[in-house]
Image (cartoon, rainbow, N blue to C red):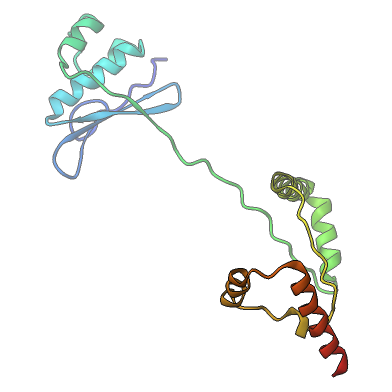
Length: 195
């Protein structure tokens, strides 16, 4: 039985087809993989490029558009700009994650437990996702270092009143010493206790 021969398209050449804008594209298949070669201004030039790909892949001469060409070197000389090949990858069919179907009379928890039994790979993937996320968060916390918390002496909401920056600057300009600050706070606390 003779090997299967690729049919010539509308162009009259193997692996050559006309593109929408008038130039000619070359596509080549070998060992279950598809390759895009390039586009050329004429079908004849595109067919010559296809032949170079056939020679490089060491395919039978019957796959050539121009079988009279005797060698790969001769075929490559007839395509002075050379050929560029790029593999055409097809999208892999992705399997959808199965849905959780809740049967009549079944609680959500029962349905989730059934799903976990039927599809343990998804449960494992989810666990790994959360473990990874937790590890990343811990790493960020470790990089940030320990935080220092300064306790507030009074639990009164009034004590947490913020003083404006201007008042702080005025105190600095006046040159308040620690004893003056302590007196101020003592008076402030005693006035709070009287209310």
